Image 1 (cartoon, rainbow, N blue to C red):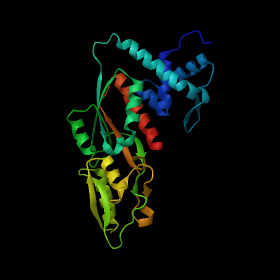
Image 2: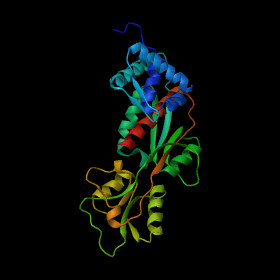
Image 3: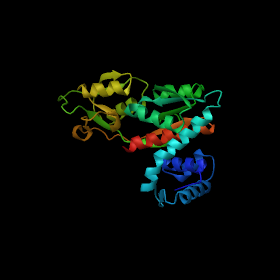
Image 4: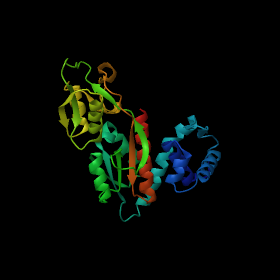
Length: 285
């Protein structure tokens, strides 16, 4: 039995390593060095008497003991934050903008991960187009935005790259000699612009068959048989089929997801790190 209490800083370092799959990223979130994070983990492993993380030159992977310890470690940190919150006079607030093409059906899991990281942090999330959210961020109406790559901007931190494809309902058939019916989001939408540009460059005629105010509306139109849409696979319900190769449509590139943030306080930064880690996991499937 372990009698001495665990070092909470070491436990926190372990959780960040697990969430971010990286000693370097964990050090950035904790505003320390990679060597310091490695030392904290080593001392925690010595304290527990087992290896928590398997280190290789190419990746970081939890050991079976690390997997078993991860959720209790989260609970320990959450309990510590609740105890401190008893004496807090105000709650910290974090306002986040998420592109509709980024959030999708994974939004509940993304919010849950942030709440698990810091239950006392007041989180406000707004969904919109990448362009509109970036304008709000520049006006300082949002603390952070997570968006698709937007034309004319080169700032932001790439947190993931996601595959896109051309999807349709399983029983949908294109009518011969008719333009490709395309279900899209309303302008301004970078994915819509990209899809139209690629079809034009390939000399393939197309028309808008449906314009939706969000990804959920577009996926509903796809499954209703209204046409084809350029979407990330995780956005679609089971049963949707990829038809790009069958119809000879141009290959869609992998699109980066970028984090723009001016957050500097430790607690919101750690919550954002948890959000980014949850999104990477969602993209990996």
